[in-house]
Image 1 (cartoon, rainbow, N blue to C red):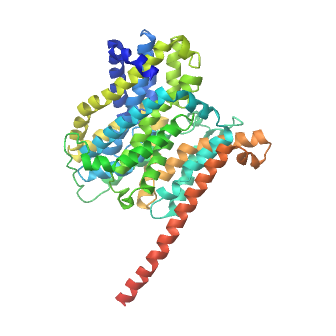
Image 2: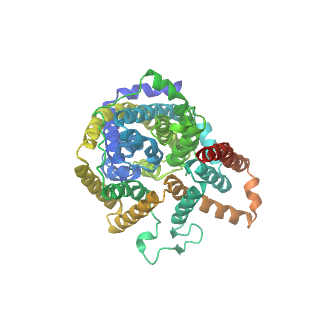
Image 3: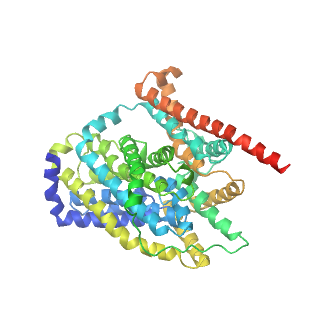
Amino acid sequence: MNTLLETLPYLLDFSIVISALIGVTCGILGGAMPGISPSITMALLLPFTYAMAPTDAIVMLAATYVGAEYGGSVPAILIRTPGTNAAAATVLDGYEMNLQGKAGLALGISLYSGFLGSLFGLTLLMLLSAPLAKLALAFTPPAYFALGILGLSVIATLSGGSMIKGLIAALFGLMIATIGTDPVTGSNRFTFGSSGLLGGIEPVLVMVGLFAMSELLIQAGSRGKIEHVKSRPRIQFPGLKLAKRLIKPQSIGGVIGAFEGVMPGAGGTIASFMAYNEARRYSKRKDEFGKGSPEGIAAPETANNTVAETALVPLLSFGIPGSNSTAILLGGFLIHGLQPGPMLFQKSADVIHGLYAGIFASTIGMVIVGMIILPVCVWMVNRPRAFLNAFILVLILSGIYTIHEGLTDVTLMLIAGVIGFGMRILRFPFLPTVLGLVLGFLVESNFRRSMVLSGGEASIFFENWISVGLLSVAAIFILGSTLHRVITFFRSKPQIETSNDSKG
């Protein structure tokens, strides 16, 4: 309560509110552009904060992070391209709603869920930062390995009709994650002498290729007339009945987002996928997922927007950046002579309270700015498909090029697009590939570090209670999904035989 009372006066600070609005606007625009991640958007703004007051600068960068996490859902819904890694789970149902002419409703659900997730994350940041930060420090390499395995355990659920194809797709993503520099020895792996591959392949390159370029290739090769999506050019927020239905997936997303956000290295991507998986598991309308389910948008969007705030807990309390975006924010602190950690709350309490006020202002601003920008985005989608596809292609190529300002990224994205085109024809799911790619480094690096610490003894993974707990939950997920598929198979088999007999 004291923290809240001390923060309230900063909401009346004009410079903090303006900084928050500028930051969230830039964040939404950056997140909505394929290839421009939250960290890149923050890095682009970082030089402009040198001459600003410390509190205003930190607020602008944090607000950019908040806005970008939401903005990634805009292209995910409208053009089947996740603007950020965390928005990959939103593509599945968001784009399907767009095809059904419900883009305005899908964007409204995303904005509504993101707003609730941000408020929930801010509340946890203000009230529970110390206990949650202690939990984050308890994570060791074996625990992080177990966390990665837990994330991979949802592949069975995301595999669609064929688990074999899902596993192959996930293995492909894990193989891509091994490209670059070895996390332990520092040697080069599968770079083929290219300096552009030393840092590995950015997940956004693969995702834009798989989702967006493959879609353009499919449409370019379509002989028939492409169906025109007639979306309403305005935001449509969920009504009372739908809002009640979304409470459960939003609650699931908020809890998972809070848990994942405070753990450095986890981030919004894992939270989004896990929230999507658990929302489908506990939904009364499981069959609608993947076909335009509002719950499939609400859960991941609530999760990744919660992460945007709770990820600041280890940064503020212990100076530990858990992602690229929080690392950029750490740089903003250091530029202005501020060292995040326990002493920051005593020496620079005004910065902390100003940051809380700025995040709240950016959360409110996210709704206002979103309602202004999103109708324009929906209107653009309703333009003739040929012109829209040309615009999307230019947007994709320019966005990818700006990541490192080189043609290597563009080439890799185009290769991923061709592979995605083949996967679509062979009906391989994309999401296991994305999940394997995102979690590959986390799993491999922490597995090998654990083995180094234990001298090659695998028992280290069963000596830590966090590791044991996460591995147990992963085993339950895998066994549960497998058992569900076996039961479904045997239940449907007699029906197939009966139908064949009747035809005879």
